[in-house]
Length: 196
Image 1 (cartoon, rainbow, N blue to C red):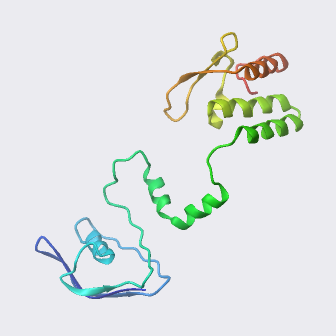
Image 2: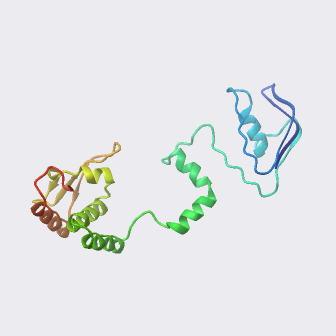
Image 3: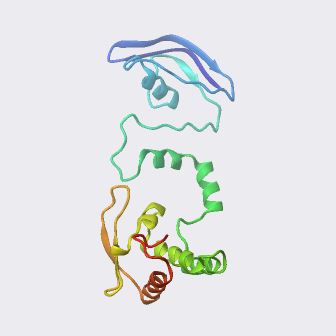
């Protein structure tokens, strides 16, 4: 429960709240809407204890957690959504339990390739697709758009065109990857794209 009693707030001599009283029962979802400069942030700062009130009091139950995002986003490499999601500690702990890492191990990739080879009509193509995506960190869109003119089998190079404004780059390919791609080129119908 949140309780404001006779709360008065003043900023730079300007009265924003004058003896305001409010009680929000537990479980209430409430929003505060108003024009710029009407005191929304000032009220929130008083509730979080970052600003002392002129008169009155703020009561918050013990153990209550309040999440907040600054009006001005900090200069960081993280996106705002990542910052907000990290603040949800319960979600973060559940994610850590379910998915403790954001990558596959070489052993897991090999298991995926084996399963791809054994299922469906295009097992070799699918297994090669998994391997190329893993080795070069390709997004699904980049993998589907991969053309044969980006694959230099003679020199063992892959010219990667990144989606989402990423930087294009040239990646070396290993022997087994080159062999898999050569076989794929021999076995599949002539076409522009590697993975038909």
